[in-house]
Length: 140
Image (tube, rainbow, N blue to C red; front, side):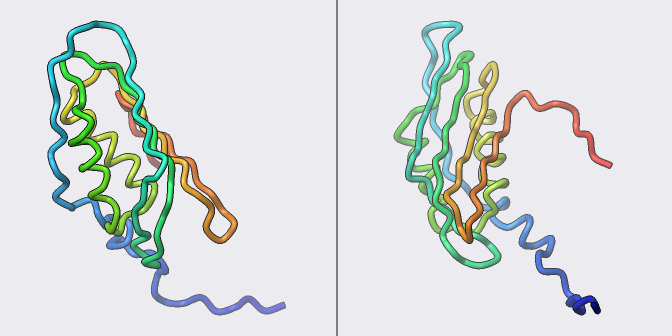
């Protein structure tokens, strides 16, 4: 059986892969932590963004877990930050990693984890988990 011809242009370009990462996200405000050694869990069950390739909406459940050091994330500004993704074309994997980078940037926690559970589209759902501190990159 002959193979079907492949398109000469890639379906996903480097521009698709980097879409949304250069967006000017709003600042996440912080306030001074008063207690050591506890965990904060922030739950966003109605997270939305847009696929940069198809323009279709992505719906997900985003959970941010972190142990504060000297600063805690202020929730209203965090909500406004997360709403900035609403109409932004960005891959689900990049959403989770960008949120983690910004949580670490603003709160400077002892550790942090961001988990995105994205609803199915075309029969496939995605779960993306990013943690900080990050391990060494192991790329080939």
